[in-house]
Amino acid sequence: LRNRIFLLHLESFGWKPLILTVNPCFMEEPEDPAFEKMIPKDLEVIRSDAIPYQWTRKLFFGSLGLRSFWHLYAKAKAFVIEKKIDLIFISSPPWYIFLIGSLLKKKYGVKLVIDYIYPWVCEEDKRAVFFSKRFWTGKLAGRLDSIAIQSADAVISVSDGINQTLRKLYPTQARKITTAIPYGIEPKDFEFAKDHPEKIPYFDPEDGFCHIVYLGVVWKEVLPTLEALFAAISNVKRRKPDEFKRLRWHFLGTSYALNAPRQ
Image (cartoon, rainbow, N blue to C red; front, top):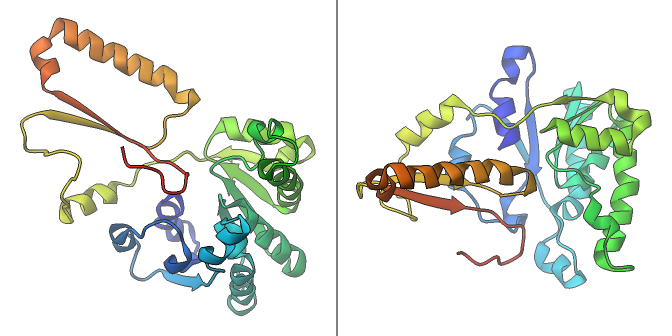
């Protein structure tokens, strides 16, 4: 989603985007046909293979970054050689693919920008049970993240908070960590939604109620905003009870857990 919004505007700044991604059949998430329709038809998209997750789950890992690493590297290497790539931009997670850029930067001198949607190294890793899977992945993340940061020409993220965290972790590389580009909106998406209406499975928009939907994750930093929202709802209930009865709230969240239940 983040990269799709970026690429819609890159040519106006003099960049021609070429997209390298993994074939959907190797992903564990369900496909989104509507999302495919929102990608420009003239965009060059190259898809790689990956090790099937049905195999790796038996070995207790399923990371798409690990499963697709060498397949993506081979495709990216061909890109760099054949198309004279000026810059590699990698947005993660999965974070392991940062190292693809590091390898190509070292071998061919191509410029590298890495983009953090979430930090690779987190506090939870430090509290992991000794010698557990989380313990070892945390140790590995710390080492590989440092390599990725050192090899990058620039580092960006979705927020100033993440940039501050990265600067504390890697003070010698702080000069590279300068820009925060938060998630924005794309006006064309609203046009697309109007032109491609779909049935809403969660409620009937024509039932006479006022439906308000929250999409995505609720995390610690969002709680003050939600508390203010609920306080406002409570105020509406006291002052305009008839209007309050028309309100319907829907919180549609996400989960990274395998086989997460629908609730």
